[in-house]
Length: 243
Image (cartoon, rainbow, N blue to C red; front, side, top):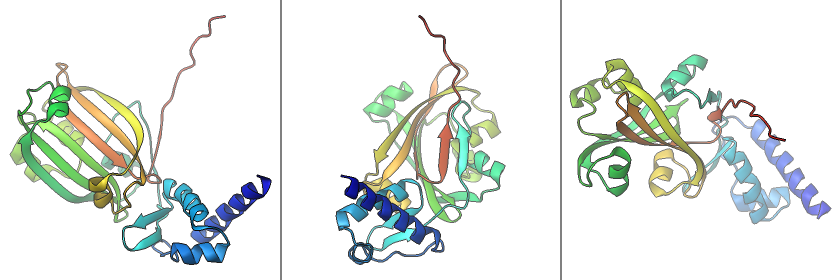
């Protein structure tokens, strides 16, 4: 067991040295070649590489190989206040912009209808887009809104990537709170394709429900974040202890 642990630790150190000495965008040797060079099995190498992928230092690209990405800056935020990626990026001078965008008029499925307090089949607007940081995909965002919530002309003319920022800018409707669930998931095909990663890669998912000041749900969203670009935390008060 000690030998296995030391071999794995050595592998981690060797991989970290390779990553730190390689310019961003460098393509690593193929898995068989790299495993042979480092004297480990492909399975052990793959497991070690997952650690660096979760840290945002490596990215596998379907059919192309594994590349050093190493984000120049990390967006860090507490979860107590809802802010857009764009707003957080501006605070640290990180260049983010919207990549691919799809706006579609569709009908609410059962889950969307339940979350938004609509009838199944009610008209909704779905907004899918990729957010780029330093020209690379960093997040994939999906928002579903009842059709009456947002003016289509405003959406077409003024949307830059954040539904939250657009609603705050137009001040319609007035907002109150957002409820958010946090989970780690494995990327399914649509998300993997959008973020240019492998299926099954680990992502941070925030599932949100935004309410107006009348308590009506107006936006049901999925935010998929690539590890390495985001560091989220929450400040918690110390509770009392009953003895």
